[in-house]
Length: 353
Length: 109
Image 1 (cartoon, rainbow over the protein chains, first blue to last red):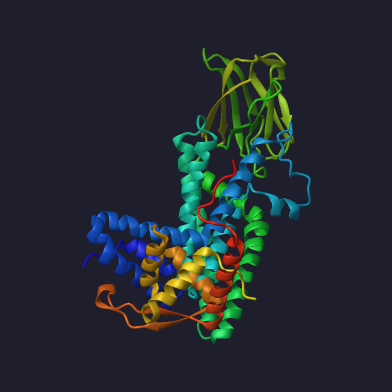
Image 2: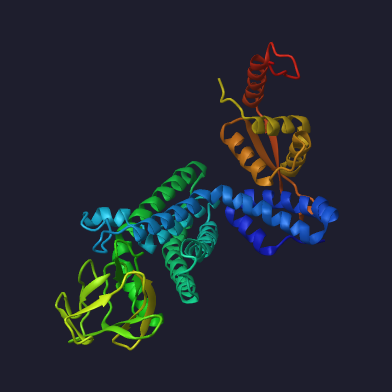
């Protein structure tokens, strides 16, 4: 007799308590074998089976997917609209408010997966349900990250960016599985021996615990834990962070920091004309230093005259080109911005004022 | 007075009433599909059954499986008296709303 897709069946079983999982999967199996395969063949029957399981999954987890999408939307809004200095509008608010409101923290997404784990183990009344919920919600978030990036920055996205998002998704999955797995196993140990009434109470308590860990782990601890994790990822995979704000009022701001809190060890910055390749500005620090300056490390470039040498906090940058005290940028002209870190790694971005 | 039933809830409850002792998940799904004359997602029926059971309108009991479903158990549903009362009330509300109208409705010129 034909069998439905194994992975779909696993997901289905993970969605429901054991007894319910058996009866519901039995109903679907019966319909699959008795009606769908004879009527349309195995391939169409498999598609039907996937549709049924996806529908059940979405019915259970739609609010988690919506939370992830809203976090992404919030992240895009706060990334797009910044103060002229380049600082986030959340800067200056009390730390706890920033921690709760900041959609820039990927730990908010980890929090969503942690919540999914607690909810999954509560719903399925066993830790496997939590594990399955964490895996599937992570997978959806994992797909969401590059899709969102491509949709919102269709021209600026490179394969490197997409690869970075995929690796960030992996970090997200592992981190959330760690926290979620612990919550789910504890849930299983507590729930299994309890009676029917006790189980009901514990299931609600477990969901409450999930919500609390969502707030505590995801949002409060998260922003503090993210910079080291991001730095580790960045140290292993990439060059100095570089992100350009959309030019406005004849100026553009280059952000060269992680999460607005960790500056790179900048070794050199160069601007050249994109068309001719001629160097417009070339600057190096007098000593290697990792120091926050101007809302961590944000460099404002404007059409017209800009200082060739400048002080970035306790770090002095001196220009080797031009030899004059200022250099000039022209509105409408395209430039290439390059930044090196102390390991010789380079990031490049084009910009037009 | 019980909660007012939605039309899908009524369809599921009536399917259980019609199927009598044979009212288990897949049979209910088929019956609802036939009555509503459209393809219905198994998840929609499942979620409705769970909700009706939570509301105390139906009761379920696990029964034996069959070879076509690899021996997996079937969950049989029975409508409780509270469920029948809710169906009666839904019918009454429906009739009251429609009283005085002839079918088909005609637009005023």
